[in-house]
Every structure is written in C-alpha cells, then in structure tokens.
Picture (cartoon, rainbow, N blue to C red):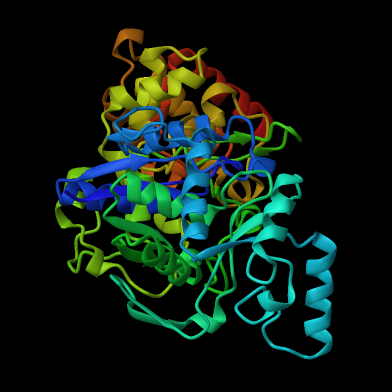
Amino acid sequence: MVRVRFAPSPTGPLHIGGVRTALYNYLFARKMGGKMLLRIEDTDQTRYVPGAEDYILEALKWVGIEIDEGQGVGGPHAPYRQSERKDMYRQYAEQLVSEGKAYYAFDTAEELDALRKQLEEAKVDNTSYNAVTRMQMKNSITLSKEDVDARIANGDAYVIRLKVPLKEEIRFKDIIRDWVVVHSSTIDDKVLLKSDGMPTYHLANIVDDHLMEVTHVIRGEEWLPSAPLHILLYKAFGWKAPEFAHLPLLLKPEGNGKLSKRDGLLGNFPIFPLEWKDPFTDEIARGFKQDGYFPEAVVNFLAFLGWNPGTEQEIFSMDELIDSFTLDKIHKAGARFMVDKAKWFNQHYLKVKSDEELASLITTTNTDLSHHLTIKLVRLMKDRVTFPQEIVSEVPFIFEAPTTYDEEIVKSKWNDDARKAMGVIKDSIQAIENESFTSQNIHDTIFPALESAGIKAGKVMQAFRLVITGVGKGPDLMLTLEILGKEDVTKRIENAILVLN
C-alpha cells in the first residue's frame, strides 16, 4: 500500500508552500488508494513555537486534507510527535556506531571553529567535517577505544556522526527529476545524534519513515541536497529507501527567487493559510481564510502551482483533482505565485455559491444586518466582487446617504434635464405602495414617467445614480433603490436637489 507523510516542524505558522506539499501528498495517496500520515518533527526544541502544532492541524482541516494516521488521529506507529520518540533514536545511532558506520565525536565548538578557519586559510574548497578532516579531530576513529570509553564514562559531551564513505557514487531516481548522481566527497559527516541526546532531522526522518512504512517521500525542492545523505543512511541501516519526488519551489510573483513573507507584505497578499498571531511579539500575519478566500479556491490554486492535468480544465473539485493527479505531471521548474489567479478561482467559487450560503457568511461577521437585507445585498453584489466581505464593504452608500457628490459627474451630468428628471422620478416613486417597492416595479414606473415628460432615461440615469449613491457607477440601480426603500430614496433625492442646485 502507498503510504505518504506530511512532516512539518512546529516553528511557526504553516507556509502556503507547506500546504501545497501536504495537498500533493494527499492527492497522490487518495489516487493510489493509500494512506496519508501526519508527523510533527520537533527535534529542534530551540525553535519550537507554542500554538504552531494546533495551527498546522487546523490549516490542514480547513483546506480539506484528511489525515488517515498520525498526530491528532493516532495509529499503530504512535507517538507521531518526534520529541516523544527521543529514546528510540539513540539505539539506531548506537547501532551504526557498533557496525562502524558512525562514530563518536568529542570536538568542542572552539575546536570545530579552529578547523574551519585553518581550512579557509589554506584555501580548501570543502571546509566541512568529512572523510578527510575527521582524521585531524577528536573522535572514536582517531582516539583509542580506552580513551573513548573513558571520555564517555567521564560524562564528556559528544555527538554521533555518520561515517560517510570517501569515494562513493550515490545514485537515486527522483520521480520528478529523474536520476540524481552525487559523489560522497561532497557530503560531510553529518551529526545524527546531538550532545543533548536529541536526534537531528536526518536521523529521525529516516528512522521514522522506515518504521512508519512510508513508501513515497513527496517534499519540497529545498530538501533535494539532503536526499543523497538520506540514501546513504538507508544503505547504512540496510533498509529499502522510499521513492522520492522533490517538488518545484514556489517563486515570487516576478519569478526571481523563493516566495517569502516579505513578498506577501510587498504584494499585499497572505502567504499563510490561516491568520497567525505570534505568541512572542503579538505580530499578526494575514491568512487566506481571514482574507475571504474559500478553501476550495485555495486548493484549486495550489494544485496548479507546479502541476497541470494536461487538459484545458481549470476548475476542479477535490475528487476531480484526486482522479486527475499523477506525480509525472508535476513540473521541475519553479511556479510563480500569481495571487491574481487565486482571486480568479475565489471569484468563481463565490459566484456558484447560493445566496443563502453567502448571506450566512456575511451575517457571521456583520451581526447588525438582517438576513432579509443581506440576501438582497448578495443579489446586488454577487457578480461584482471577489470576496464575501466586499458584498458589504463595496457599497457604503447602502448604509449611509451621500454627503458629497462626484464633481466630474456633477459637471457633466447635472443639467436642466437632470433637475427636471429628479422631480419626475420623485413623484413616480412616491406613487408606488411600500409593499410594492421592488426593483421591477420601480423600473416599470420611472421609465414610462420620464418618457411621458419628454426625458430620455439614458441621459439622466447617471445623474440619478449620483443622487442616490454620490458616485457615477456601481451595481444595479433599481435593486439598490429596492434595498434602500421608498422613504430613504425620497430623502436622498430631496437632499441632492438642495445641495446640487
């Protein structure tokens, strides 16, 4: 069975690129009839941020990614939080030491710094702790067994490092990038177990993927340089490596470099799925959800950032994405984060939602609005906005009569015909019964009255809109009048005539 995992670190809010990684894992697992796992990789306790884990779980739930096994769900390989698996990793690191595939290193921070400086002064290209430089340092390769045992018994600080072969070609086939070939001389002897007993990412990642029976590792391109090291670790343990697929980067909208938080600030768009309040600084980062994006729009948008179905279809439900998704249709090149496309998807999903559903979304955040009024606002604005909150925010004139009027429209449209027309319109409106004050009845009353007065409606409608809203353009005017009501419309006409004349 195909088993994939999403393994974020709780070091802050989940970046939207992480959501895409989770989505691709989820789509692949569902397409293959497999399982989706969630593992929290919190081995670096110095970077742990309170609330980040709950944020991850909430974000995945919001976009509709269902976890089959893992943190928050449970399963046969629990616990799924790496900090709770700490004691288990040591035995695997010690196993590699006993087999001569890893070693104890007792070097202090000062000694490591001195080594780097020495190599830099000698103009050596590779200044890392590797198969060559290890022979100059204090470790269980250069020290006698008695010395090593004594140091450990004495409580001296040490780490366990992988013993990387000096001359070995490391090859693996990436599903997206085809064959990757790296020489072992370019890989340093990575620390597997830190001096505090915590495993590094590399050890914990490989051990957990093996024990949790992960068959496919689908992760971001930034992990590609680590993949040869991971292949070495699988080989050292004698385990079969999973298949790898390294996803393309999410790029800035301009295409030059990786998408960052700063790009969101400069471009005025969120780069996190949900709003996040930093527990240390109280700084608030915007979220797609709070900005008014629908989860299905975000999913649709993210799916196309690096993948293409090979057809003209752009709007996909989650089930349709699952049915169409294959790893071989993922691109190698980075994907530009074009937020206008996200807005396009959101506008589509807004338009296909029912008036009732949109009204319920609006009244949740605007408790002063009646349901009856909200439904009318939805009808008025649904085809003109991108986000639900704009249904209210884009029509301030609905809630407050204008006190100023667009000067350009006044100059061009407020003339004798307009003055005469306002009187005709006012009289026509007053003749309509309150219970019959609908957009259709208003239209059917006003237009014939203007015609009878010898006034062409087309020449005065912009002036009429100006009187009602203060501006020269906007949503359906007749429906706007219906929403405002007979009394308010009459007052606005009377006030505008006084001010404009």
